[in-house]
Amino acid sequence: MIVGRRKRSSIELLFSLRGSVVPHILPWIGVMTLSAVLVVWVNVALFPLQLTNASAFAVFGVALSLFLGFRNNAAYERWWEGRKLWGQLIADSRALARETDLFLARDLETRDAVLRLQMAFMHLHRLNLRHLPPDDAARRWADESLIDAPHPPCAALDRIADVLVAAQQAGDLDGFGARALTERLGSITQAQAGCERIATTPLPFVYSLLIYRTSVLYCLLVPFGMVETAGWLTPVLAAVIAYVFFGLAEVTEELDRPFGETVNGLPLDSMCRLVEISMAPHLGQDPPEPLEPVKSYLS
Image 1 (cartoon, rainbow, N blue to C red):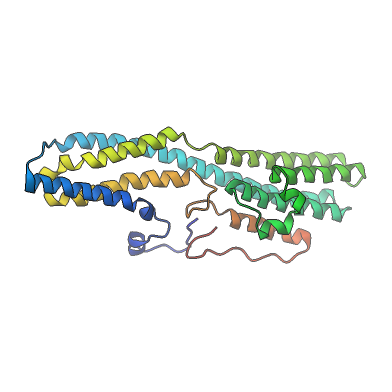
Image 2: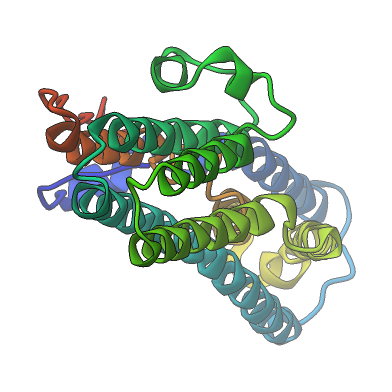
């Protein structure tokens, strides 16, 4: 995710490509600009074309903009819901650490095992959402049996439940503590399921199909409504229109996948590190340094 503590200047915002969708839509802008150049050249150099009034394209453009705005809002809602669910996971992890200090004070070995498994869950959940193989951060907390499980994040939560059951049977965890910790695991499971729902259920493909087809048709036809009044300025205006419509469509595609490793995806690595920092005092460890943005990108 692109971050920055200081306010960016107007010049930076105007020319910055980091976090921009321009590199992705530049081919579309080029195609639409060349198409407009061809329309103007044919109309001026070869033969007059059958032109139309620009007002019809204005009405069509407004309708297309509204549809793009609706889809963009739906994609942003998915992105923001994903951030809220990860915020819940961070809060539940911190609460779990405090609750284990309270309810497992007589069994520090079990407490440490629960907290380590919670950290394993966070990293395995991150990898599962991003469809990535195990990395060093995950292997630090998770053993091979968890990594090789059919569903590693669920295996970590199941292991926590087994540890708590053993502690209760040994008399190290009372009934009230077992209930409180079970409810905490339930809250973590709900957040996990919410993230997986977002990751596995994208916006309907027909939306993307309709948006791109309509945008292409509109950008190809709009020079016929402007060439009579704009002349050789038509390609410039066509490029601006293509930037707006294809840019909005591309932004929607990125926000639709909030857990991806795109520049506008959620910083899951940084949030896992945040939980590690919170867990360190409970495990008697020195907290690691928070992850810093690299060229304004926080992974």
